[in-house]
Image 1: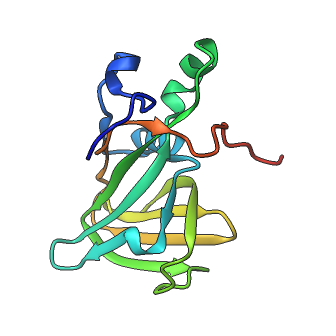
Image 2: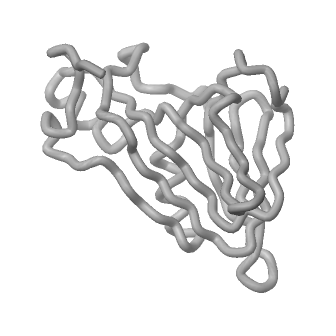
Length: 162
């Protein structure tokens, strides 16, 4: 893969790719903020029952870089990231036409609903009244950037109607 001189790089921001792990609800709230407004095609969500792992390949808006982009008057960035939920025992979707590979989904938030003994449910709320519900034996979620940042196609910061 080649990069043009217009491509953003981690070196430009003097930052390393994100690699974070959430082991409690407070950690997960941080990850939720970082993946808000991430988009992904339906085909980029995978559940490996045998490994008890649910993963999404996201096109993540770089919220951590937004202020720097504004200050330097440069375009906003996105980066491809993997969000992995470990110890996934069951995955359910609501409002998602699984198998329709043309559907683009957008993450609004991720929350953990604790059970009785460390187990619980991770709920990914998506735009358009859609959701992904993952029953887990324990809370362990990893977010890892896997590509160099690139200029956000819209060149704009995501906005939400209040």
